[in-house]
Amino acid sequence: MNDNNCKIPDAEWLIMKVLWRNSPLTTTKIIEEVSKEAKWSPKTIHTLIARLVKKEALGVDKDSGQHKFYPLVTKDECIQEETGSFVRKIYEGSIYNLVANFIHDEKMTAEEMEELKKLLDEKLK
Image 1 (spheres, rainbow, N blue to C red):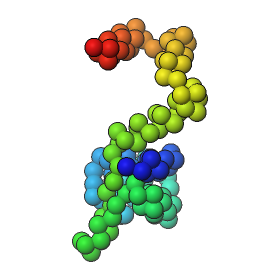
Image 2: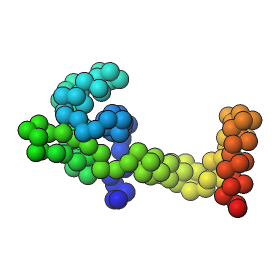
Image 3: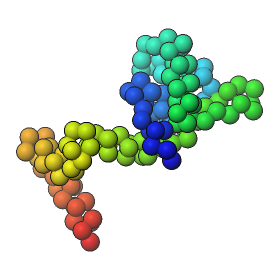
């Protein structure tokens, strides 16, 4: 996977989320699904789809008479890339700084901290 496939701005994430839920889809169906969440013109949605194809985040099946689009990258791959980018940019690459910030600012519940502790304990084994 090319990391650039997952460098996806917020607007393009909406297109990807639609296709991660259900694919392949025609442009018409993508427009219908995206319109439930955003008030964008069909032309805007066409442009976003074209960008995602150019980035190789979406593939297109042209054999069926209608173009049908499908993801070439998984949601998990993109989440990992986005998380890594966020941690590098905001927390200077330190996961510790990220977690410490949430703990110190009390944004984590006791239950979430217990789950995090379990994950850390599993990772240490």
